[in-house]
Image (cartoon, rainbow, N blue to C red; front, side):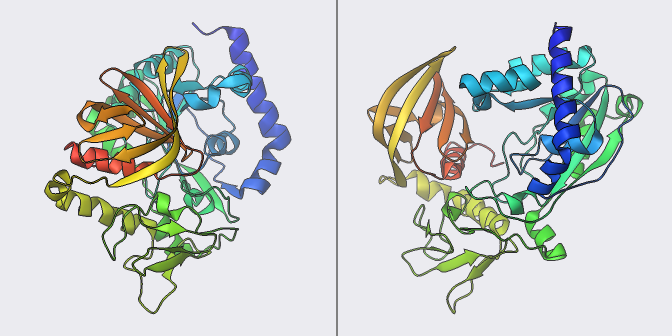
Length: 391
């Protein structure tokens, strides 16, 4: 049972931020709201995830209080304790089971506290809405409350997951639809699931070409290799490097991202793809089509340097290796002296492009890197090589 005093603090914090700083937030973030009213007294709000500020958009737009499901990493340390005291997010541990998170969602709803979930779990790598687990539809059906679907467009173009730089340019948010408890009762779980996927789907490349908004900024191409981890010209993994205004491979491929969020060649030879989503689709298909050959590869696919390896047990975090190399083979990941067979890894998740979380048969681990690395290449190869459905 959540104490009433805590709930009052959370609601007061949201009201103060919205009333005093809502206008400033809109100006700073480029947010344009749909100004939609929600009629349900208690509801689950599900939104697509492309921006670190996604949590604030529906609050400012609908003027309703809701408790957010957020990464447990933002609740670490003194800063995390302040966030927890003021707004009380429901923590979700990356790369770990979600039973406790689900329990807190039901607990909040039962006390009349609306909850907001970004069911992709992570910001989109390529600008398209990512995989949404059917479990979300199960939660909606069991909750017995209303469902609000909220879609954000332009968030990826303004703040791509792979970049450390925020661009200028507009971000749009609006309620797609509100489903009443009566409507949901007459829908099957599968119908609810299809409605969620349909309402939340967006494609940044399609949006960019249709509207042609400009998203100017510094270092527009820096860290693109975080998402573009296979070169379509030479077919090698982890050979693309980037600078502030361009990216290239040693095979001769050269390109950049322009102010419209699209890719263009810097040579007479055009790029095979003009956006990160199409490139990422090709990467997935390439790995799947060449899985058998990849499994027989004895040399490492890639390595990343200067990592720190931690193991977490409860609230205790232990440093296992420092300044170690992480080497990815067809059957294992080696981090310093630690060896993790790919088949023993149950989940992998990435946080802030420098932290990789994974659960194995015997524990919960974290890899920290001093510089940005492509966590996507780890997850992609792990999924393909272990025969999991590619999501």
